[in-house]
Image (cartoon, rainbow, N blue to C red; front, side, top):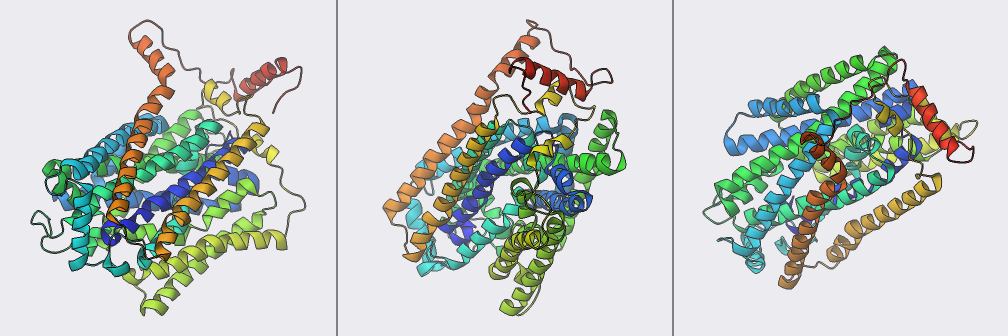
Length: 590
C-alpha cells in the first residue's frame, strides 16, 4: 500500500491495529464470563444451542481457512518471486515446518515461536530502517529520501493531491483504508486463535497483552514500509531497481514484493535474504496459531460436542493432531488454487469482511448483550452475508460495468460489501431480538457452569479454569472500562485525528514534517523492540530460573499431575472451593 500510495499506506498499520486493541475488551469479557471455555464457539453453543453454534462455526472456521490461505499465499508468492522456487513447492513446504512444531508443542509452541520469530523480525526492521536513513549509499538521510520521493512524483505521480506520495489527500487510499478498518474486524473477532490465546491468559494479562501487542504490531508495517517500500519508490529510476526503468508491476505490488525489492536496494543480497527470512517467520508463526485454533474448534466444538461427548484425553489429543495434519495439507492445496486463479493477498484482505464480517457482532454481542436471542444469531449473520455479497456484486456491475475478479477487488465495490456485511449483521440481530424477544434476559452468571475440563487436562489446568481470587467482579469491570476507553481513544486518534485534518487541508508533508514523521517512527520502533524482546523474559523470569535449576541438577523436576478417576475435575474444583470457604469466613466465592 505504501508503494502504491506513499504516506497514506500507513492506513494499513492503523486499520489493523484498532481491531487488536478493541479485542482487548472482548478478551477480558471472555475471561470474565467464561474462563472455563476452550474456544469462543463453545460459548455460543452454551448460550444459544447447537443451531446457532453451527452458524458461528461457519464464520470461525471460515476465518481460519481464509487467513491461513492468505498467510501462505503471501509467503509462497514472495519466496517464488525472489528465489525462483516453484510456487507449488513453496505452498506445500511452508506448512510442513509449521506442522512439525505445532503437533509436538501445541499452543505453548506457538507462544514460544511467536516471541522468537518476532525478535528476529524486529532486528531486521531496525537494521533496514536505520541503514536507510543514516548510512545507505543510495539514500543515507531523511532529507535525501524526501527529495527522491518528490522527484519520483514528477515522472510517476500517485493518485494523491498534485501526484504527491507525501500527502494524505488520496481518496483511493482512504477508501482502501476504510475497507481494511471495517472488513478487518473479521480477521480478529471471528478468528478462534485470538480468543484461544485470551483464554490461555489471566484476565489482566490478556487485556494488556492485546493492547500493547497492538501498539507493537502497528510499528512493524509502518516502519518496514517507511524504509523498504519508500526506498523502492525513491529509487524507481535508479539502475539498481530490479524493474528499472519501469515501476514494479501491479501484480507484484499486490503480492507485497516492493518490501523485498526495497530491502535488496538498501542492503543488497543480504537484505533480500533477510526479507525472505522475515516473510517465512511471519507466515509460519501466524499459521501455527491458525492451525491450533482450527484443531481446537474441530476437537472441542465438533468431535467432543457432537460425536464423542465422553472422549478421553488420548482421543482428544489424537483428533487434534489429525486435524493439524489435514488442515496443513489442505491449506497448502488451497494456496495453490488461489495462486493459479490469480488471487493475491491484497484481494483476500478486502474480501474477508464481505463474507465473514457479519460474524463480528454475532460473537461480540454473545458476550455483551443479555437480550440477544437464539433466532437473531441464527438468521441475522447469514442474511447479512447474503445481502453483502449481492451488494458487492451489484456495485461492481453498476460502478465498473462488469463483475469479475478485478472489479470485485476495486475499492468502491469492496466498501459497499464490507459496510453492508458488518453493520447489516448488527441491524438484523438487534431488530430480530426486539421483534421476538426472550421471556427473560440471559443470566451471564450461569455461563461458565457449562464448561468442564477433559481428562487431558492437568490439575493445574483445571484450577486455571477458575478466576483468581483477586479477580473480583468489581475489579474486572474496572479493567473492562479501562480497556474500552483506551480502545476508543486509540481509534479516534489514528482513524480521525491524524489523517482527516491533513486530508481536508490537502496538506503535503514539508521536509521538517517528514523528518519528524520518520524520527517518531524510529523512536517508536526502538521502544516496541525493547518491550517485545525483554518484557517476556522479565515476565517469565521465575519459570526460567526454575528450568535452569532443574537442568543443573539443583532441583528435581515436578511430575505432571494428570486428572484420573481418583482425581477428577469435580474434586479439584471442590477442594478449591473448600479452601476459599475456609479463607473467607464461610462464604464460597463463585
